[in-house]
Length: 560
Image 1 (cartoon, rainbow, N blue to C red):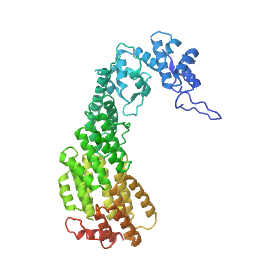
Image 2 (tube, one colour):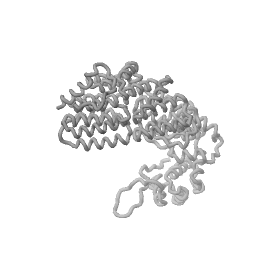
Image 3 (tube, one colour):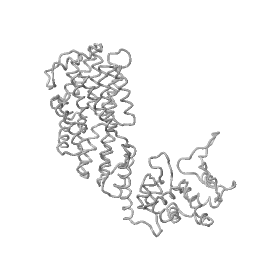
Image 4 (cartoon, rainbow, N blue to C red):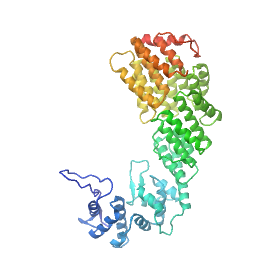
């Protein structure tokens, strides 16, 4: 048939005034717009193929739904192809009935493919064929050429069905001989989940976009059809391994009833923690754990990140209990928990234990980064820079973008104390590495590094900027970032010899360390300002104890 499909036939809204130009109408069409669309959708020799009477029937049944109009046009073409002259009676059906008639117009394999792909938000030919259980792609290739399948060549998976079609396929009165039973739908969902897992595992190297897409669709399938988690467990670990925290748009679950529900809530809590106070993260993860729906290895994940949130909040005892439980379990997160215990030892000033632990961590526990944290606290910026550089190199070798950004941010902070000129480039590189990542704490580190670089310089609203960042950090509940900021503020005023402002900074540090944790920050700040310590220190430094205060004092002297 030589009918011409008019690609720009979507009517715009009817406007008043002198506005010219046409826009895509968002939402339902008016009756006039429906008629206009149908009249211009199929044209031959300047005449509309769909006559006025037929257009009126289709418009009335569509209730202004553009999708109904597209399906009606598709049915019109199919009827003409089979030698039948379309008549009003062929279109006197509501949307579900039109879907049913559309199904009847498809071949058996095409119907099988259509039902299969209705399980996906988006799909490609491989997913469609694998889910249908077919060995050839011909039927899928024919189906995606039909108007009811939408195409986005730039999407992760290029094809998708309108959500209304997907829902209707499950509920419409299907009169075909090969209609699916509930068991058929469940079997297809299992094949769909397997197909997504195969695509994710077959990816060449880390692909965050594919991982997130597979997780989102896979979790929905497992939840809606009560399927075993299978590869979703490994995918969940892959999601957390890189510390990338790409947004994972998952629907909220009302009371987890299955493992898939619980895993959905778990991953949502981990992603949201980058934008919420850490106390809310603790609440979310506790709620997930209390369901008892998570398998043991995923419960370990929730336990670890809850313990990490406790540490961020400065709740050392609760954090230590969780970290010890995870470390003792010997699972996938045992090295991370060991690192957490090293951080907790550092928090209470036990650097001897922290160092002994760090030396055993290796790459799984991010040992170089932990060593850098220990050297930094000792004021040994050269050793800290070496350790952070090694941590960044190791992350690059393992293709871990998140760890690379963390190490680079800490390198920039370290060099900001000793070489502000070089630190400017390192800080810019850290911000570049953070592009596309969602790491709140690391972003704070780069901002503090910028403060340290400018420490002692007159001009600029140092105090105002510090107040602003202080508010953002307080909203996050990340204690370590708050401590670093106050240390930077004291360093700035110590260089300028502003005793009143120094004492204000010391008061804020004192409040942050009131529970005894991170008290060494208060010691360091007093050394920066050349002020006597308020009390005898309980910090267990490594190496030459007298060298620590000397190093920090030297940094202020050099900056002056």
